[in-house]
Amino acid sequence: MITLYPAIDLKDGRAVRLVKGDFDQSMVFNEDPVAQARAFAEAGATSLHVVDLDGARTGEPVHAPVVAEIAAAFGGTVHFGGGLRSRAAIETALAAGAERLVVGTAVVVDQELLRWAIDRLGDGLVIALDARDGKVATHGWTQVSELEAEEVARDLVRTGVRHLLYTDIDRDGMLDGPNLASLRRVARSAPPLTVIASGGVSSLDDIRRLRQLGIDNLRGVVVGRALYEGRFTIPEALHELQAANT
Image (cartoon, rainbow, N blue to C red):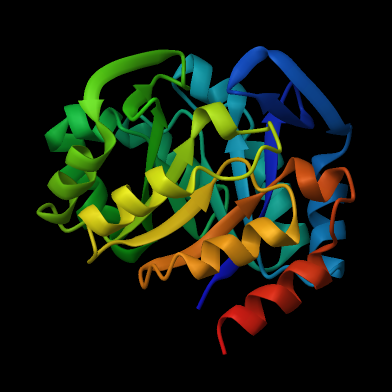
């Protein structure tokens, strides 16, 4: 089952999209992210991907009150990430009402935090694996490590993590289509993990291409700018995903 996750990225209290993860290149799509969440729900979306961009940069959630409003207005499953690098930050995000928390690769370095997060969140934990040129990026995409994305994915299998969000940063916000080859390599390196693809989706054809990869553990796709710009609608995307799942 492939789930559609419309994206709401929060910066300065507004719904924006970054270009290649660059905080200096952001486009505002809605001044009211709560209204945007409500609109996504009214269009038929049942899951939502919310990122606190300011939190990702500072290292702790900044928009928790807004996320709480979004969760209440949306009514469906809300994934929330951005700045969740400590137990206190994770508890703050939980209190905001998100059903699943997207925790970045800080937990890869901090094994104690990773073990705690697995015990605390269980199936509600999603690890965000963000990569640029195949290398894992950290600290809100501002730093690129020497860690290979595929290697990190394989290591996560042994920890008990169940869900992975994979983002190719160079495709994010660019509408150039997802990096299918990179996604395939990461997903196939860790088949027990369910994978959510993010970055670059620009058309219904891109969603079809994701399906045609034949990745059994691909369970979701995050879409942002393409929806905001009206390149396709949520009903159209849901129809395509339902067709892909039959």
